[in-house]
Image (cartoon, rainbow, N blue to C red):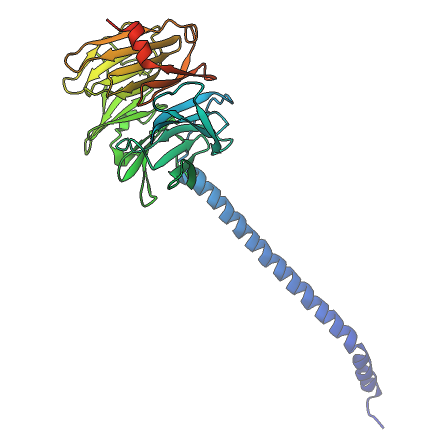
Length: 396
């Protein structure tokens, strides 16, 4: 007989209740584990959010914004015209807003509207091409660089034994889109037009980008540079901006250059819209308000605005060094100019033709054979013979 029957009853009861107690114990442990997991996930979530916020703050405050300006796009407007020799033909490259880059050819000996032929190919389709360039040391280039408003830098190469071209490379520009380019043997110089920051940069053969500070652009033009045109004269780069003309030499700081009669207190009184260098090494400067000027970089002398130009707003300059002839586009028509190697005489005459009178000339290209393509109002493309213009307007 058991001395304590209640003990036996308690043991039996405990044994019966054990599964229930175990169940509650496990449930409690699971709840604790679940809360722990939720806590860990909460903390990790905070960590993820923190990392994301940190990244956003770093990108926003730690990186330099591009500050690119809006580009005025007019679908179908001819923005770029350029040409080069290709065997016994002239090849023109024509860029229209939102329509990529097209190419046309015509015979050197007989180039006109009727003999102009398209190869039917469009490069960088649907993009707005801002600049086309190749190494000017070669009359017949094997590769061409193209810059678009979408910050694309494309390279086209001529196909061997074929009269065709193919896009072989495509890069993303790290800065605002380049509106002008200058090809040198070891690198490509690019100038960004629609930017509030200084944007003269380069792209070398190793596909490495370098910013403007490596190209001697001075601090004082960093604020309002919104347009650039680059031309090369020996080791000097001439940079046209909406604040004036700058000379950037090898290893030397860039310096501002302007005529003595320009009010330098007005930052936009000397806006440069076109640049060119003739066979006498004089710089042709097309301005928005001051007309067509000539600058001699040896004597540092400025010629007053050349007469014979229908407007003070110069929109385009294209010249032939070998033939000492230039075509000048304005917002009010077209002019032809002539100079002589033997003296300092420069003569210009307004082309009195209903095709051009009172119309804005968007782009001009004077081909090696003296044939010129002219974009009128950005839409109509006229093919003209500049020798005929010389005989008619500047024969004397």
